[in-house]
Amino acid sequence: YAGEKPSQEKFEDLARHMVYDKSLITGDWLRARYEASLDGEVMANPPLRLPPGFVPEPSQSLCRDERLKAVVAPTLFIWGRDDEVQPVSCLESFNAIPQQDALILGRCGHMPYWEHPGKVNDIATWFLRSA
Image (cartoon, rainbow, N blue to C red):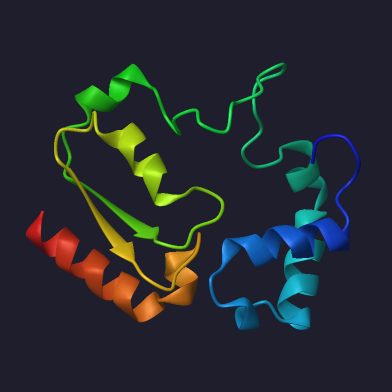
């Protein structure tokens, strides 16, 4: 959303980095998601907008917020082992959360809920019942 306007080609490139199973990225899915990304409200308030002038280093931790230490709720991260957007190493940035755990799914990219919906639902149900 920064700089040039979004293009279907850039969107497709991004989408292919989001999943392990590239067969999930169909023409119909791409068209629908790309068209939704052009919605006026989305364009005015793009997701994950960084503060002006902020350029993160590739090695920078995902989250350095001091408030993480104050999270008292049990927290479960479900992460894809093959995530090209935020690799598993990004989980280290959440070590400050006292009651946190992580489940790493193999053959899975940035969207575990889409690539493994049954597993994610089962895991979330188990976690919520046991927390």
